[in-house]
Image (cartoon, rainbow, N blue to C red; front, side, top):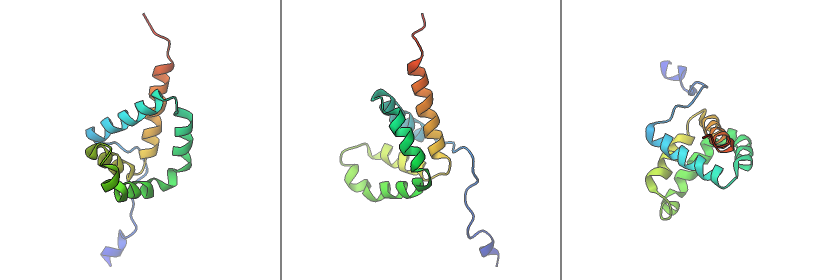
Length: 109
C-alpha cells in the first residue's frame, strides 16, 4: 500500500525556479511581448489559461516536430518544459511586468 500513498502527489505550490536555459527563453519571450506592446493581452491570456498551463505544455510537445522547423528547437523545448511546472505562469507574468516597468521608466542621465 506504500505505492498508493503518493499516487496523487503533486508539486508543492510556490515559485517555479527555472533553470538557466529556461530563464533565458522566458526573458526572450517576455522581451518580445513587451517590445510589441502586447503586455496587457498577454497577461490576460496567461491569467485565463493558468489552470491549463500543463495541458498547453503537452500540446507544445505534441506540435514540436512541426513548429521546430520554424523556431529554435532547444528554446521551444525548454519553454514547454518550463510551462509544465506549477508556478510557471506566475513567474512569466512577473517577468513581463518587470520588463514593462523598466521600459516605462523615464531615461535617467
